[in-house]
Length: 151
Figure (cartoon, rainbow, N blue to C red):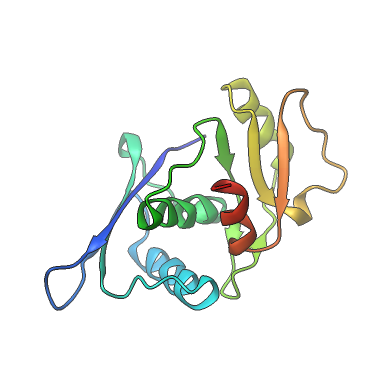
């Protein structure tokens, strides 16, 4: 299942910033925020962050971590990712992007739905059959993923 992840990051007008997640684990979101602060140098500590998984779905799959992180970065920087890009990957505490299971099925489904670029863990690229017309970009960490997503 492909899902759309939306984030809104803005300066908090109160002493304690709000962190609200709908359809995603709030503790996992807090971990991803900490990773972005520590590993990417983003200053999110004074910002309200609202996260939503569109369509009312509830996602517990670690493969959505990178999409959630890039969604928050997108809102924080005020830069939009290309609409033809799909993102898949688990994010570790060191900021590394870990491989996910069934990557071929995931990218094939994304391609069927019209996506032409996929950002995933570099470790997932070995021996993977890539559909014609799909650009599969491997990244090692969240910084590299940001470079690819917003370049």
